[in-house]
Amino acid sequence: MHAVVPLLAVLAAVVGCGESQAPSNRGGSTETLRALESIERLLDAGRTEEALRAAEACARTRPDDALAAEMLGRARMAARTPAADIADAYARAADLRPDSPGLQSAAGITAMQAGRVEIAMSRLSRAAELEPGNAQHPLQRSLALRAAARWSDARAAAERAVALAPLEPSAHLALAQALLGGGQPSEAAAATRAALACKPNDRALRFEVGSTLIACGQGAAAVEVIVAPAREPTASPAEIEILARALEAAQQPAAAAEQWERLAMDPTQPWRPCAQAARCHTQAGDTTRAQEWIARARERGAPPAEIDRAQTGDR
Image (cartoon, rainbow, N blue to C red; front, side, top):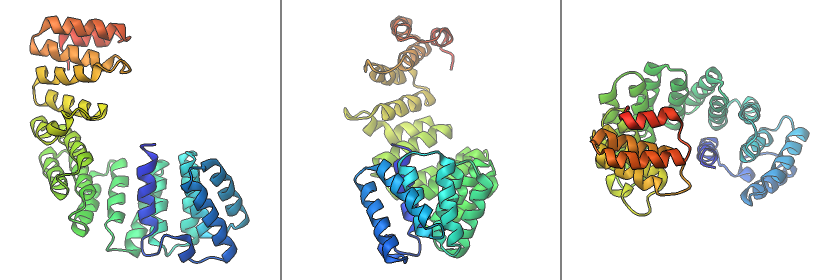
Protein backbone atom coordinates (compact mmCIF):
# COMPACT_ATOMS: atom_id res chain seq x y z
CA MET A 1 0.00 0.00 0.00
CA HIS A 2 2.78 2.42 0.83
CA ALA A 3 4.22 2.27 -2.69
CA VAL A 4 0.87 2.40 -4.48
CA VAL A 5 -0.88 5.31 -2.79
CA PRO A 6 1.83 7.97 -3.30
CA LEU A 7 2.21 7.01 -6.98
CA LEU A 8 -1.55 7.16 -7.50
CA ALA A 9 -1.53 10.61 -5.92
CA VAL A 10 1.29 11.78 -8.20
CA LEU A 11 -0.51 10.47 -11.27
CA ALA A 12 -3.76 12.10 -10.18
CA ALA A 13 -1.91 15.40 -9.94
CA VAL A 14 -0.11 15.21 -13.26
CA VAL A 15 -3.00 13.80 -15.31
CA GLY A 16 -5.01 16.82 -14.27
CA CYS A 17 -2.35 19.17 -15.65
CA GLY A 18 -3.99 21.72 -17.88
CA GLU A 19 -7.36 19.97 -17.77
CA SER A 20 -10.06 19.04 -15.28
CA GLN A 21 -9.51 15.66 -13.71
CA ALA A 22 -13.16 14.61 -13.52
CA PRO A 23 -14.10 12.31 -16.43
CA SER A 24 -17.34 14.20 -16.96
CA ASN A 25 -15.39 17.36 -17.69
CA ARG A 26 -12.83 15.90 -20.07
CA GLY A 27 -14.78 15.10 -23.18
CA GLY A 28 -15.95 11.76 -24.55
CA SER A 29 -19.34 10.32 -25.42
CA THR A 30 -22.10 10.12 -22.84
CA GLU A 31 -21.91 6.33 -22.87
CA THR A 32 -18.16 6.38 -22.29
CA LEU A 33 -18.46 8.89 -19.48
CA ARG A 34 -21.08 6.78 -17.73
CA ALA A 35 -18.84 3.72 -17.97
CA LEU A 36 -15.83 5.62 -16.60
CA GLU A 37 -17.83 7.12 -13.74
CA SER A 38 -19.04 3.64 -12.82
CA ILE A 39 -15.44 2.38 -12.74
CA GLU A 40 -14.45 5.41 -10.69
CA ARG A 41 -17.11 4.56 -8.11
CA LEU A 42 -15.84 0.98 -7.90
CA LEU A 43 -12.29 2.22 -7.32
CA ASP A 44 -13.46 4.67 -4.66
CA ALA A 45 -15.26 1.81 -2.92
CA GLY A 46 -12.12 -0.35 -2.97
CA ARG A 47 -13.68 -2.91 -5.31
CA THR A 48 -10.51 -3.09 -7.39
CA GLU A 49 -11.05 -6.44 -9.08
CA GLU A 50 -14.48 -5.42 -10.32
CA ALA A 51 -13.09 -2.07 -11.42
CA LEU A 52 -10.29 -3.79 -13.31
CA ARG A 53 -12.68 -6.10 -15.16
CA ALA A 54 -14.89 -3.17 -16.10
CA ALA A 55 -11.93 -1.06 -17.20
CA GLU A 56 -10.54 -3.88 -19.33
CA ALA A 57 -13.91 -4.25 -21.04
CA CYS A 58 -14.26 -0.49 -21.51
CA ALA A 59 -10.81 -0.18 -23.09
CA ARG A 60 -11.47 -3.19 -25.32
CA THR A 61 -14.69 -1.75 -26.73
CA ARG A 62 -13.20 1.77 -27.01
CA PRO A 63 -9.66 1.19 -28.30
CA ASP A 64 -9.30 4.78 -29.57
CA ASP A 65 -10.50 6.50 -26.39
CA ALA A 66 -7.74 8.07 -24.29
CA LEU A 67 -9.97 8.34 -21.22
CA ALA A 68 -10.70 4.61 -21.34
CA ALA A 69 -6.99 3.82 -21.66
CA GLU A 70 -6.15 6.11 -18.75
CA MET A 71 -8.85 4.56 -16.56
CA LEU A 72 -7.47 1.14 -17.41
CA GLY A 73 -4.06 2.26 -16.19
CA ARG A 74 -5.57 3.51 -12.93
CA ALA A 75 -7.49 0.29 -12.41
CA ARG A 76 -4.42 -1.83 -13.14
CA MET A 77 -2.42 0.18 -10.63
CA ALA A 78 -5.09 -0.15 -7.94
CA ALA A 79 -5.19 -3.90 -8.60
CA ARG A 80 -1.38 -4.10 -8.38
CA THR A 81 -0.92 -5.60 -11.83
CA PRO A 82 2.64 -5.74 -13.27
CA ALA A 83 4.29 -2.36 -13.82
CA ALA A 84 4.70 -3.06 -17.54
CA ASP A 85 0.93 -3.52 -17.95
CA ILE A 86 0.24 -0.24 -16.15
CA ALA A 87 2.81 1.54 -18.31
CA ASP A 88 1.27 0.09 -21.48
CA ALA A 89 -2.15 1.49 -20.59
CA TYR A 90 -0.81 4.97 -19.88
CA ALA A 91 1.34 4.87 -23.02
CA ARG A 92 -1.79 4.11 -25.07
CA ALA A 93 -3.60 7.04 -23.47
CA ALA A 94 -0.68 9.38 -24.13
CA ASP A 95 -0.40 8.26 -27.75
CA LEU A 96 -4.09 8.98 -28.25
CA ARG A 97 -3.72 12.44 -26.68
CA PRO A 98 -0.23 13.66 -27.70
CA ASP A 99 -1.20 17.22 -26.77
CA SER A 100 -1.97 16.39 -23.14
CA PRO A 101 0.91 17.26 -20.78
CA GLY A 102 -0.74 15.31 -17.98
CA LEU A 103 -0.99 12.09 -19.96
CA GLN A 104 2.54 12.48 -21.33
CA SER A 105 3.81 12.91 -17.78
CA ALA A 106 1.78 9.98 -16.44
CA ALA A 107 3.09 7.80 -19.27
CA GLY A 108 6.60 8.88 -18.36
CA ILE A 109 6.19 8.16 -14.65
CA THR A 110 4.72 4.71 -15.23
CA ALA A 111 7.38 3.93 -17.84
CA MET A 112 9.99 4.74 -15.20
CA GLN A 113 8.26 2.40 -12.74
CA ALA A 114 8.47 -0.32 -15.40
CA GLY A 115 12.19 0.26 -15.90
CA ARG A 116 11.79 1.95 -19.27
CA VAL A 117 14.03 4.86 -18.41
CA GLU A 118 14.69 6.25 -21.89
CA ILE A 119 11.00 6.18 -22.75
CA ALA A 120 10.25 7.88 -19.43
CA MET A 121 12.67 10.70 -20.14
CA SER A 122 11.24 11.21 -23.62
CA ARG A 123 7.66 11.38 -22.32
CA LEU A 124 8.58 13.73 -19.48
CA SER A 125 10.50 16.01 -21.82
CA ARG A 126 7.44 16.20 -24.04
CA ALA A 127 5.26 17.06 -21.02
CA ALA A 128 7.63 19.90 -20.10
CA GLU A 129 7.50 21.23 -23.66
CA LEU A 130 3.70 21.26 -23.55
CA GLU A 131 3.51 22.83 -20.10
CA PRO A 132 6.81 24.56 -19.30
CA GLY A 133 5.55 26.24 -16.14
CA ASN A 134 4.66 23.05 -14.25
CA ALA A 135 7.36 21.93 -11.80
CA GLN A 136 6.09 18.34 -11.72
CA HIS A 137 7.45 17.63 -15.18
CA PRO A 138 11.13 18.50 -14.56
CA LEU A 139 10.82 16.97 -11.07
CA GLN A 140 9.71 13.62 -12.46
CA ARG A 141 12.31 13.88 -15.22
CA SER A 142 14.99 14.33 -12.56
CA LEU A 143 13.87 11.07 -10.95
CA ALA A 144 14.13 9.27 -14.30
CA LEU A 145 17.59 10.69 -14.91
CA ARG A 146 18.67 9.56 -11.46
CA ALA A 147 17.54 6.03 -12.32
CA ALA A 148 19.90 6.23 -15.32
CA ALA A 149 22.71 7.61 -13.07
CA ARG A 150 22.86 10.76 -15.20
CA TRP A 151 23.60 12.94 -12.22
CA SER A 152 24.44 16.18 -13.96
CA ASP A 153 21.27 16.07 -16.04
CA ALA A 154 19.25 15.04 -12.99
CA ARG A 155 20.62 18.05 -11.13
CA ALA A 156 19.71 20.40 -13.97
CA ALA A 157 16.14 19.04 -14.10
CA ALA A 158 15.79 19.33 -10.32
CA GLU A 159 17.13 22.88 -10.37
CA ARG A 160 14.46 23.71 -12.94
CA ALA A 161 11.81 22.22 -10.64
CA VAL A 162 13.12 24.28 -7.71
CA ALA A 163 13.04 27.43 -9.84
CA LEU A 164 9.42 26.77 -10.76
CA ALA A 165 8.29 25.69 -7.28
CA PRO A 166 10.70 27.06 -4.66
CA LEU A 167 8.34 26.17 -1.81
CA GLU A 168 7.91 22.53 -2.87
CA PRO A 169 9.98 20.23 -0.60
CA SER A 170 10.07 17.38 -3.12
CA ALA A 171 11.86 19.61 -5.64
CA HIS A 172 14.62 20.41 -3.14
CA LEU A 173 14.89 16.75 -2.14
CA ALA A 174 15.21 15.73 -5.79
CA LEU A 175 18.04 18.23 -6.11
CA ALA A 176 19.65 16.84 -2.95
CA GLN A 177 19.53 13.28 -4.32
CA ALA A 178 21.00 14.36 -7.65
CA LEU A 179 23.82 16.21 -5.89
CA LEU A 180 24.46 13.27 -3.60
CA GLY A 181 24.61 10.86 -6.52
CA GLY A 182 27.02 13.22 -8.24
CA GLY A 183 29.41 13.12 -5.28
CA GLN A 184 28.53 16.48 -3.72
CA PRO A 185 27.32 15.64 -0.20
CA SER A 186 27.78 19.14 1.28
CA GLU A 187 25.70 20.73 -1.45
CA ALA A 188 23.17 17.90 -1.10
CA ALA A 189 22.85 18.58 2.62
CA ALA A 190 22.17 22.26 1.91
CA ALA A 191 19.41 21.33 -0.54
CA THR A 192 17.99 18.94 2.05
CA ARG A 193 17.79 21.70 4.65
CA ALA A 194 16.06 23.90 2.09
CA ALA A 195 13.40 21.19 1.73
CA LEU A 196 12.75 21.22 5.47
CA ALA A 197 12.56 25.01 5.50
CA CYS A 198 9.56 24.76 3.15
CA LYS A 199 7.50 22.78 5.69
CA PRO A 200 9.32 22.68 9.03
CA ASN A 201 6.34 21.17 10.87
CA ASP A 202 5.79 18.30 8.45
CA ARG A 203 6.61 15.15 10.44
CA ALA A 204 7.06 12.82 7.46
CA LEU A 205 9.29 15.37 5.76
CA ARG A 206 11.50 15.63 8.86
CA PHE A 207 12.26 11.92 8.70
CA GLU A 208 12.86 12.01 4.96
CA VAL A 209 15.25 14.91 5.51
CA GLY A 210 16.90 13.00 8.36
CA SER A 211 17.50 9.96 6.16
CA THR A 212 18.97 12.13 3.42
CA LEU A 213 21.28 13.91 5.88
CA ILE A 214 22.53 10.51 7.07
CA ALA A 215 23.35 9.65 3.47
CA CYS A 216 25.18 12.99 3.24
CA GLY A 217 27.37 11.96 6.17
CA GLN A 218 25.78 14.49 8.52
CA GLY A 219 24.55 12.28 11.33
CA ALA A 220 24.54 15.00 14.00
CA ALA A 221 22.40 17.24 11.81
CA ALA A 222 20.04 14.32 11.17
CA VAL A 223 19.69 13.71 14.91
CA GLU A 224 18.85 17.35 15.49
CA VAL A 225 16.09 17.22 12.87
CA ILE A 226 14.37 14.01 14.04
CA VAL A 227 15.23 13.44 17.69
CA ALA A 228 12.12 15.09 19.17
CA PRO A 229 9.43 13.27 17.14
CA ALA A 230 11.38 9.99 17.12
CA ARG A 231 11.44 9.89 20.93
CA GLU A 232 7.69 10.27 21.20
CA PRO A 233 5.86 7.15 22.45
CA THR A 234 3.85 7.10 19.22
CA ALA A 235 6.94 6.97 16.97
CA SER A 236 6.74 4.23 14.37
CA PRO A 237 9.38 1.47 14.06
CA ALA A 238 10.63 3.10 10.87
CA GLU A 239 11.07 6.44 12.65
CA ILE A 240 12.89 4.83 15.57
CA GLU A 241 15.23 3.06 13.16
CA ILE A 242 16.06 6.33 11.38
CA LEU A 243 16.98 7.89 14.73
CA ALA A 244 19.15 4.87 15.59
CA ARG A 245 20.99 5.14 12.29
CA ALA A 246 21.40 8.90 12.75
CA LEU A 247 22.92 8.39 16.18
CA GLU A 248 25.31 5.81 14.76
CA ALA A 249 26.31 8.22 12.01
CA ALA A 250 26.84 10.88 14.70
CA GLN A 251 29.26 8.54 16.50
CA GLN A 252 26.95 8.07 19.49
CA PRO A 253 26.86 4.25 19.79
CA ALA A 254 25.46 4.08 23.32
CA ALA A 255 22.52 6.32 22.41
CA ALA A 256 22.04 4.37 19.18
CA ALA A 257 21.95 1.11 21.16
CA GLU A 258 19.10 2.50 23.27
CA GLN A 259 17.03 3.10 20.16
CA TRP A 260 17.78 -0.32 18.70
CA GLU A 261 16.75 -1.84 22.06
CA ARG A 262 13.56 0.17 21.96
CA LEU A 263 12.82 -1.25 18.53
CA ALA A 264 13.78 -4.79 19.57
CA MET A 265 11.38 -4.75 22.53
CA ASP A 266 8.65 -5.48 20.02
CA PRO A 267 8.62 -9.32 19.92
CA THR A 268 7.43 -9.29 16.32
CA GLN A 269 10.67 -7.63 15.20
CA PRO A 270 13.25 -9.95 13.58
CA TRP A 271 16.81 -10.46 14.81
CA ARG A 272 18.24 -7.32 13.24
CA PRO A 273 17.46 -4.73 15.98
CA CYS A 274 18.89 -7.11 18.60
CA ALA A 275 22.09 -7.57 16.61
CA GLN A 276 22.36 -3.84 15.96
CA ALA A 277 21.90 -3.06 19.66
CA ALA A 278 24.63 -5.56 20.51
CA ARG A 279 26.99 -4.13 17.90
CA CYS A 280 26.47 -0.58 19.20
CA HIS A 281 27.04 -1.71 22.81
CA THR A 282 30.28 -3.35 21.68
CA GLN A 283 31.36 -0.10 20.03
CA ALA A 284 30.51 1.77 23.25
CA GLY A 285 32.61 -0.68 25.30
CA ASP A 286 29.67 -2.20 27.19
CA THR A 287 30.44 -5.88 26.66
CA THR A 288 27.92 -7.09 29.25
CA ARG A 289 24.99 -5.45 27.48
CA ALA A 290 26.41 -6.54 24.14
CA GLN A 291 26.37 -10.19 25.20
CA GLU A 292 22.79 -9.88 26.45
CA TRP A 293 21.63 -8.64 23.08
CA ILE A 294 23.75 -11.14 21.17
CA ALA A 295 21.88 -13.87 23.03
CA ARG A 296 18.56 -12.34 22.00
CA ALA A 297 19.73 -12.00 18.41
CA ARG A 298 20.61 -15.70 18.38
CA GLU A 299 17.18 -16.56 19.79
CA ARG A 300 15.57 -14.70 16.88
CA GLY A 301 17.68 -16.50 14.30
CA ALA A 302 20.49 -14.06 13.50
CA PRO A 303 22.99 -15.58 11.04
CA PRO A 304 26.53 -16.30 12.33
CA ALA A 305 28.05 -13.48 10.25
CA GLU A 306 25.82 -10.94 12.01
CA ILE A 307 26.69 -12.37 15.41
CA ASP A 308 30.36 -11.92 14.53
CA ARG A 309 29.71 -8.29 13.56
CA ALA A 310 27.93 -7.69 16.85
CA GLN A 311 30.81 -9.20 18.82
CA THR A 312 33.47 -7.15 17.03
CA GLY A 313 31.49 -3.94 16.66
CA ASP A 314 32.16 -4.06 12.92
CA ARG A 315 30.25 -1.40 11.01
